[in-house]
Length: 494
Ligand code: NAD
Image: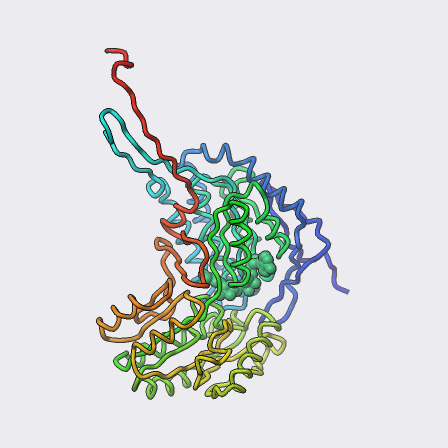
């Protein structure tokens, strides 16, 4: 019998690694092999409280550390992340399934956020107006909030905590990270580096768990701000509960991203990029293309080309450098995707490439769905409006760009929308009229760089200020406005 204490992940509280006292665990599983690689404790409320209290105790001193000194810890962390990039990328692939190249790119994105947060000395500067009335000045100071927490999904275990944490810390807040219980191992490695980066005890903390752990964070009176990324149902719950308790909240939800292809698009580029968007990370990106709307004649060249690209994609264990697509996260996810595809077919969609029941030699136990292309999707099919989070592209054909934009805007989500065209006028119309937070023009994964906000609209985002860049600095600071008078008759004459 296997040792139940083996591979237990630990919490990191007040600068110390701690075994959780939890009696319930979730197994972390390598999705390419179905091997159990870790056990995530469902940390009880007392342990969440200990992490928040440690962050609360560390806050008064940390906020007084000059910003130029605070960011030195981030610079050291940046170097450590670079030195351990390969090890971190491997950890991501092993627990999440994406290809090793995708994992390296993920950590690159994480490091870019550390770099941008290193600009906090300028980014968090206030504003000053001299003589708003005679002898009176007025200015804005940005100050940290206190304890902030990040609740993360499974699909980017290395990157998503970095959309928030470096900015929060640079601004003088203290922090608690709650990774997805499905992929706890990458953060174990990241926190081993955080431990070496010189942050004072209690400034950065890690608590593992699932729903109850999250709810304890949401209800904790000392937590001032919550950043959440995950499914829309949970995003709504987190936003409602956090804001009901008076906390700031930014909650990123699910997606069903359309790509529109106009007849004047470049066929080779459009097909290659759309295939990467739909099948990259096994379709488990929040910026993965899920629907492709071809306009007019584009249907003729696009359909054949995407079918060929889907059938050609090399699927397997992401640790193999030759592999272009890994498994989906779990047996449950594979079954759910396959059932939804069947439902789509039952409702009239036609499978041009059917990736269900995939067998990958050497990974017979893995949770693989091969690239799938469904044709003839109707706006009323369940599959057309439901987030699949798998490597499935649904094709829709319309006659005009107006119809295509109307189709894109029908959905409940608004995470990303992309257009392929060689017409500037069409691009301009599209970016103005389409209802989504992240827009790509001849781009298939419109992921904002760290110095831009990671946007989102409709049911893909709840809140106002987003993660990354200046939005993150605003989210993690409160403004104090000072109006000041110093009558000159009070001054000693020199
Ligand atoms: P999820 O909603 O199941 O879990 C996200 C986090 O919420 C986890 O830490 C989990 O422990 C916690 N959680 C789950 N159920 C909860 C509950 N009932 N109450 C409180 N907390 C709960 O999401 P997931 O499956 O890990 O991630 C995939 C989803 O994330 C997809 O919908 C995807 O589109 C979305 N996502 C969105 C973005 C974005 O930028 N909009 C980015 C990445 C992923």
